[in-house]
Length: 242
Image (cartoon, rainbow, N blue to C red; front, top):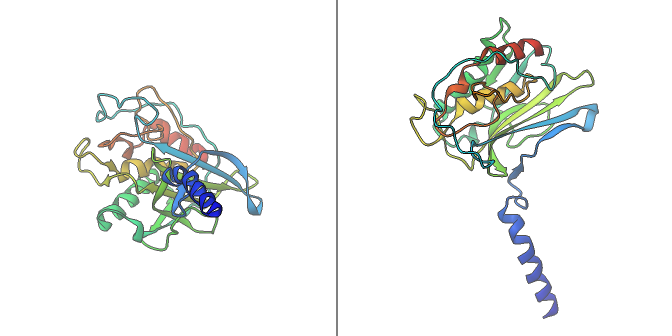
């Protein structure tokens, strides 16, 4: 009887952690990391992208007017010297596969448009199910904790500070879509968030510009699409990272 009581108490104590996502084996912890030494002499960086309002701030009244700003997006690393080839975990896509793959491709293409180099390539299959230092640059959806995270990017840099590997994961606990116009649905736009995440894979940090216009601004509301297009500062940051 005493043993059964101990088991019941242990289960009760574990329940809150499981409900929070910390104890679930299929949940990925999206926790910011600022340069942690890992295997192979590499350094890990994790950038977490929260939903707008997740930190107690309401969404701005205007989320659709796009514009420009010239403050250069800051660097946390240098871009890979030869570019990165990404693979999508297509089995994880929670919406129309064709539309999502196009949006992911457009996210990377937005950055390629800022330079004459073909920095990115994207394959429709072969991505991992969760972030890992495995030699594959993956894009996909996974359950991220905390739920306030819309997406997160894991990057690994070498001793010279250049990115050698990167993984991008959207949070499957949120509602996603591929929007035709700003504010056209109460979902998060794949290309809007994806373009921001792609910026981290070239070495760009978050940029909190006053107008919240930059692609690298660190949050997004439902219905927004303006991060699909780079500001002058985003593009200048990319060129500085090369």
